[in-house]
Image (cartoon, rainbow, N blue to C red; front, top):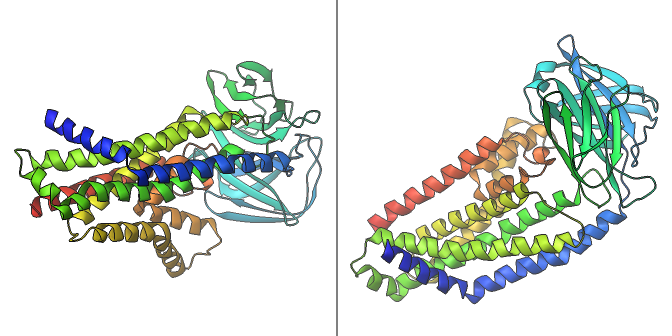
Amino acid sequence: MRKFLTIVKRETWREIKSLKIIVIAVIMLAIILGTIPLISSSFQSSSPQLGLLVAPFNNNGSMAMKLLVIDNTGSPVSISGNLSYIYYNNDTRVFISNFKTSSSSTITIYSDIPFSNYVNQPRNFFEASVSGINISTFIFIDVSDSLSISYWDIVSPSNSSLPGIAILVTSFDGKVPSNFSIYINNTLAGIPNNFGYFRAYGTGNVTYKYMNTSGFIKFLSPIKGISITVEEVITSLSSSLISLFVPIAAIIAGYDAFAKEKVSGALDIILSRPLKRETVYWGKILGAFIPIFIYFTIISLLSLLFLMHYGIFFTPLEILSLVASVSFLTFVFIILEGISGFFGRSVATPIIWGIVIWIFFNMIYSIFSLVVIFISGTNILSTGAVKIENIIGLGNPIDIARYITYFSIPNSQILIYGVSFADTVIASLAWIIVTVLIFIYLSKKFE
């Protein structure tokens, strides 16, 4: 163990001092810090669109939905035209002509969708438009298999910097639930009115209490609320930057740890010592992994401190998901670079293979999804196509890293439609196990 730790320490210190990895980390940090003010100012100057609150309930085994259209301050409004909507969990599309909402109460529409389809899904999505104007993309929340809650970000009519939330809630029997209350930062904000509508303004955690249950609904930040939050955009940006820069840093670290020493003969000298080959190989793997993990964790923390200046706060789960995404992608690409190093007869060979692998998973792999979608005859603009693309993405470590970060975003399920958290965990473990086994096999074969 002491020899193993010595190798890890030597490799870690060498990679920490690597100017190439430092430059990559600094570029990524500069992009994040340079982009955040632009995103923040863009969101602050945006005007929120009309929102649509929809609370499904059971109508003799089929789904019925209470609807309420609101403006950016949460005030109910009347709107008329042709309504079309998509229920995402089964890609159901419905068109209703001469549709009109009410500004004084909810209206109800009926469907042939089995209500059990809704109950069996923890998160359901609904997108609607009236006369071609998109008025909502939002989330349902199931509470104890007895309630439907939908919410929409709003702003205070008197103070545009003060955010708020509008909520519509119904029991599965279509009635307004009693004993249901909303809290902002553990302070009672109010209860729904006689048709299940509620709105409140403030900052902090929005939670509910219903009989013997309670839970988290939304975090309200000082940024003006719209259909997608600044936190969601920044998380998506961070995920894209991780997918771009972390594999490159891992390729460089893996190349330095294996290929460079193999070509120079230094690796043979190390292996000639009374050390187990497994000790040397895994010491180098861990020694290459730790510096990248440290650098990109520091980047994440510095970015979060910078975001606090703009009143943007992330939950511990969002922070953890970013760290997990970095860890997974770093480990997989270092192992892949180590594998390519076994075949390299020159220093350039494993670097070229690493870049080829990176390009394949970042750019070419998505072509497979398009081919499958085309062969299956699925409409490329439908949610069915999104589902196929996301499922195929489970074979791509870069897509898996994105999924890991997306699961921390409250509204992210549409980004990973068709893929569950369990699917992502299984796929990530499969990638780790398979690459490790291949690495072990080749390390013995090329002794």
